[in-house]
Structure formats: structure tokens, C-alpha cells
Length: 122
Image 1: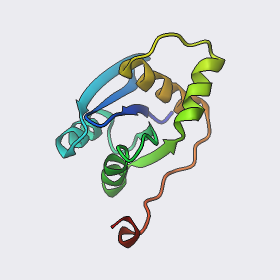
Image 2: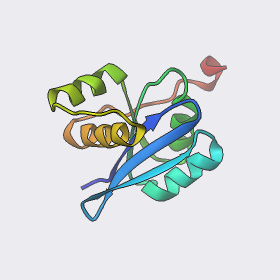
Image 3: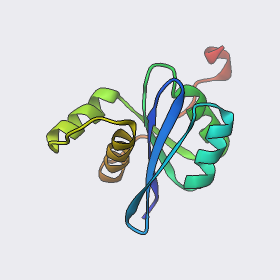
């Protein structure tokens, strides 16, 4: 089974969660290149990285991961919110959100994110 890394994206930080020996492992890094490298090292390039489309804050991470050969799925935040509500999830924190995003990625078939042409992004 492929490792799924759930990532809660904010302007300053990235909260990530993936399973190690069946137990959730959390990592919080800065939303910058140094943090991206730590995140990739923690999950590995063969993992599926699932994140919410939070404003434009997810884009640098998504481009970085795809550039490193990783698989990325970007999900509408409302989809994740409804997924949590359907399972009667309680509480709100970056760590919990990352764990819910990981679960969503494990339980659903996701379309891989593809970057736009660099000229369009500029």
C-alpha cells in the first residue's frame, strides 16, 4: 500500500501526517524550501502527498514536490470539511486536519495534480 501524507497548509507552516507501522506520525515544518525538503525526506518521493487548495499557499509546495518526482493531489477544502463532518470529527487543529487529510487520501481515489505551464504561472 502506498504511503499517503496528509498536509494542512497555512501561510507560515505545513502540518503533515503519515502512518509509520500503523501509527500516525506528525511533522510540522515551515512553508518554505527548507521545510519542503524536510517534508519530502520524511515521507519519501514515492509517497502520495495530499493537501488542501488553501489560497495560493499550497502552490510552492506542490510545484516543489512535483519537481522532485513526487505524486501530489490537491483537494478542495470544502471536500475535506464535509469528509470530517460525515465522520463526526470533533476539534480543530493543524495536526488533526493533517490526519484527516491523510485519511481522505487513503480512502478516496484522487486525481493527481499537474502544474500549469510556467509561463501561465508568471
